[in-house]
Length: 276
Length: 242
Image 1: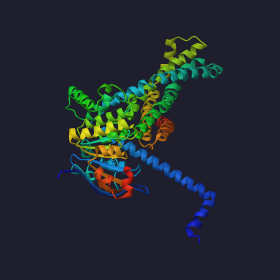
Image 2: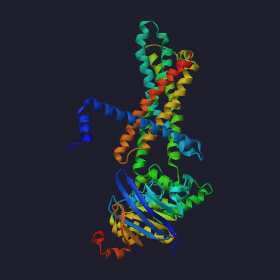
Image 3: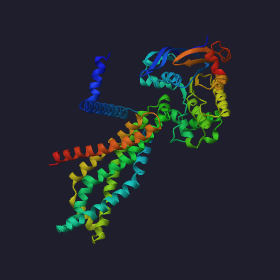
């Protein structure tokens, strides 16, 4: 005889609306579980970050790996970004006879928005996936367990140092990227014109002020923190096995990139709110 | 009667519906080499991971060197962990560090130790495992047997009172397996350590064990010396040694 529970189950399985509702609810539940887990992980980071002893040597090593090793990629991307933006913007400005506004327009676009966001996205790909894969493979090969059983706190040694290094280095990379982009823009302007270095940068600096620089640089600290934290979270909590390494790296890039855009959106809203 | 260094009472552990350890009771004495022999997936590794607090048990009392593991805070647990050496199945060498840095890593908390003392200690442990020449190599340049030896040297550097070996001979050829087994015996003699050796390698058990416990589906099913168990009346136990 069919029980009441079985017949209810059949009804649910037959009803597409119910299936969608169940799927939606389970997706929503796992989303909030993930948010809660990341929040707990963040709290653990801050708790360990303020407690001595501090791992300065490992922090410096991570700054070198994240900052210096990402420099060539960020520099090349920055140069191309400035060059392309200038070449693409010139015809539109020329239609209005406003070609002389090119350095100012490009400078404001790069410094306020494009430079920090593109740098953060590149770092989400390079640094975020690198940290995610490294930590996941350390977990698979029991290196994190080995650290723990030898009495060394892996959160302090591995996570605090990487997140702190990403938080410090991504703003530095964004500033370098801005500078190189502006140089790329100078090259772009001179492809079809003749503007001196001095004149170009005089126009750039005349167009920029503290209100452009401060919020743009401040948000890069949050970008760096998000990239480092998500990379560490995904790597540290990866499932065992080599499949987990790939998944951790992939998830780290996807979530970190998404967070960069969300932080950027919030930063723009706050800037427009308080910048008046 | 020798001092009891590890005392496990009614240990139970499940992962979801899978009950891995069912009411485990065990006493290990100082200076003893205790081999836990069993098939893969019988709960051997979970048992020793519970001992160092890597896995929290569901029930039971774990007393290591007189301390109840479940009652310790993280600082106290770390202090106990420093007296326990754990050789992982994969050796768990830190990929990004050289052999020297791997061996120095557990010593980083000791602020009183000078550079000269540290170097001497690293060399001493490398000599113990016969790999002085590998000091500046990266783990990726080492063979499986060498990795196990370096892993052992790294755990010995803190002069542990208890050694836990998780499948020390898995994945090694018979000759290297024998060398590792003899090394385990040397460690016991030289440092008077008490060891739990988790393995399914009967030859390793024969060489290293003072006492063998056979685990099956999360329960201890037989206990004795190698000679006693080989002659066991239980067909299943005997089949292990055939």
